[in-house]
Every structure is written in C-alpha cells, then in structure tokens.
Amino acid sequence: MAQPQKPKSATGLASRQAATGLLIAVLDTRQALDGLIDPSDGGTAFNRLGDRDRRLARAIVSTTLRRFGEIEAALDRMLDRRPRKAGALIRILQIAAAQILFMDVADHAAVSTAMDQVTADPDGRHFKGLANAVLRRMAREKDTVLVGADAPRLDTPDWLWTRWIKSYGEETTRAIAAAHLVEPSLDLTVKEDAAGWAEKLGGIVLPSGTVRLVPTGRVADLPGYAEGAWWVQDAAAALPARLLGDVAGKRVADLCAAPGGKTATLAHAGASVTAVDISAPRLERLSANLKRLGLSADVVAADLLAWQPSEPFDAILLDAPCTATGTIRRHPDTAWLKQSADVKSIAVRQAGMIDRAVSWLKPGGTLVYCTCSLEPQEGEGQAAAAIARHGLTPSPIAADEIGGIAGVVTEAGYLRTLPCHLPDPNPRLAGLDGFFIGRLIKP
Ligand SMILES: C[S@@+](CC[C@H](N)C(=O)[O-])C[C@H]1O[C@@H](n2cnc3c(N)ncnc32)[C@H](O)[C@@H]1O
Image (cartoon, rainbow, N blue to C red):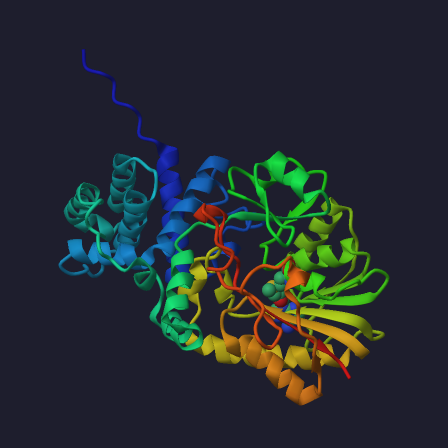
C-alpha cells in the first residue's frame, strides 16, 4: 500500500523565509540584524516564529553572513551568470547554500524549503529549473566545492582586509579573519564565585574572571539568570569598567551606557553611577538588566553632545559609538553593513564626546575611553588626539589589572584586544571582542 505523503514542514519553511527576509534587510536595505530581531518588534515574520524556529532562522542568517564570501564563491562556480529580474532568487540560494555547506541541516530540507520559496516568488519562479539544478549540485559537491578556498580572505570585505593589513600586518589580519569564522562563546560577568558558576554552567574561568561557555539554548533558561547572579558580556567588554580602579562611593558617569554591561560592573563595585545614553529602548533594557541584577543607577536619556551634568564626576567611562568592527564574531552583519567612510565620520563624533567627557571630570579624575572597533583611528588615534587637546596624562594599564591576559597591553600602556587573542584548544572557547581601552587622567 502506498505510504501517505508526509506533510511538508510548514515550520521549516517559515524559518527559512524569515532567514531570507533578514538577509535581504541586512544586505539590500542595510539594516542591522540586532534591531531586526529585537523582540520588542512583535510584528516581524521572525518574531512571529516559535522559539526553536527563531533560533534556527537566526543561526541560518548568521552563518550566511559569516561565510558570505565562500557562499558567493561556491555559487559563482555553479552559475554561469546571475539571472536578472529574479526577485529574491539569489538571496534564497545563499540561505540554502549556507545550510548545505556549513550547517548540520539535512540537504533535502535546505533544498525543498528553498524550492518552495522560489516557487512562491513571482519573479523567482521563472528560474525554478535553474535553482533546482544549482542546489542539487551544491548538495552533491559540498565536500569539494570549497577545497583550497582562502576562507578568511573570502569572508572579509576588501575594505576591512586592506585596513587591517595596514594596521596589524598580514599574519594578524589572517588570524583576526580566521577567528571570525568561529561562532563565539557565551561570556558571563559573575557577581561572585566564578569557579562555582563555571562548574554549574559547564564553563571555564578566564584569567580575568569572566565565566565562558559554549552557548546552548536560551540564556534566560540558564541557572543564575533569574536570580541575577551574572550578566552577559564579552570578556574584553568586561575590562574597561574595572580599569577605573576602586570606585566604591565615587561619583562615576557611564557615558553611552546601554544596554548596561559596564554600568552593572560599576554599580556592583559600589559606585554611584550616572548612566547616560541617547537610546530610550536601549535604556529600557539597561533598567531591566539592573533590576534583574538587584543593582541601581541614575539613568539619563540624553544626547551626550547636548547634555550637561549638575556637578562634575570623579571618574568617567566613555564607551563611544563606533564602527563595531571588533564585534564581527558576534555580529557578522557588521562586516557587510559598515564601510570605510564610516570610520572618518564616527571618529569626529567620538572626539566631540571625549571633549565633553573631559569637561565633566574633576581635576585629577580618570577617563577610561573605549571602543569595540579594530580601527586605530577610533582608538589609539583618539587617545593621542585627546592628550594633545586637553593635556591629559596617560595612566598605563598593567597586565595584572586584567588577570595577565597575554599580548593585549600595548607599549603605550593601552589595551588592544583582538578576536584572535586568548586562544584555547577548543576554538568555541577562544577569542575576545576587539576593543581599544585607554586610561587618561585630567590635569
Ligand atoms: C557601544 S554601545 C554601548 C554599550 C554599553 N556601554 C554597554 O557596555 O552595555 C554605544 C552606545 O552609544 C549610544 N549613543 C550613540 N550616540 C549617542 C549620543 N550622541 N549620546 C548618548 N549616547 C549615544 C548608543 O545608543 C549605544 O547604546
């Protein structure tokens, strides 16, 4: 007797549709992935998915962006030329190729959901035969199509590659780009008992005290989340706040504070914190985070370039907006969203923010300036220019202030962390976000 046909997995299709929509929004309308998947926007196809499908859609789109250059190279091998007026065809093929080449997803699920999408696309459907041939060949040749390909180079946009070669040399550029190919760890800043939490969560304790684990499932389901024992923060992002030293009882400003990882560190250390950020939705997340952690701060929604505090501060942490090229491991869309010209324009804003921050410090007060950018113009360059403009004195950072993490203190006494730092035999437990951190004293 003929077996009844299995119904098509509608949920499987929905997650691929959402992933394709997200890819289009990132690459064609230049929107950041984080904003697109923010749960506060309940109306999106992504947010209408169930938990499991949301995780799958997110994994697919992240993998597509992380491996975009290789996916394009593989598609180029299978398409003589790219059809025009084909709707979302190419984006659908990219989403399917990511699953076939790089994910633990059954090839037939990737191919059939892609074909369903192509069929439903009013322009793409004219290319059904082509799509089917390309995807079947991709599945057949998946073990050979990228043999010998230079993955770190292919998956890095030209402008970043060129700038990194100039700033860091070829060997380090390759190491940075190779680190971007690996999904990053989940890093937690714990209030206390790092070893105990590492054991409970199946993680390790880094030299700087951060607990690191390979992420599985929902963060909010992990032990310790509900009771506010820890917060999520890359190990490098956990460093700037502690470089202000003993802040207990001091009046400290956390400028550009949301979603509040550094505010939490300062408040937990006993500072009286004023947390300023321009983004009301991001400040809502900051307030929710502080509430869960049982910590408090004076939260101010304001543009730093217009705001004025009522009295000066003992210490200021300025985590300035930047190109965020140090966080490509966590946000692979950044590599394709930002461009060279962004560095220059954002550097002008950063300098304006530094000027205001310096004017709000008491004499002898400490400014820690940081950015999660790999661009020296947003880091070392800003520190040098601020010293020249304001007569600040650098306060060199010592390796033992950061648990002795190797290779991150520069000759000038700044911190320059890179995605290829902090190696580990398990690549899923290796790496740091790329940060510049400088500590400067007001005369
Ligand atoms: C790198 S993020 C801050 C991350 C945060 N310090 C943390 O540790 O969670 C940069 C922040 O700068 C804020 N921002 C950008 N322009 C600003 C401005 N003109 N005034 C105040 N905040 C601004 C953004 O809303 C964003 O939250």
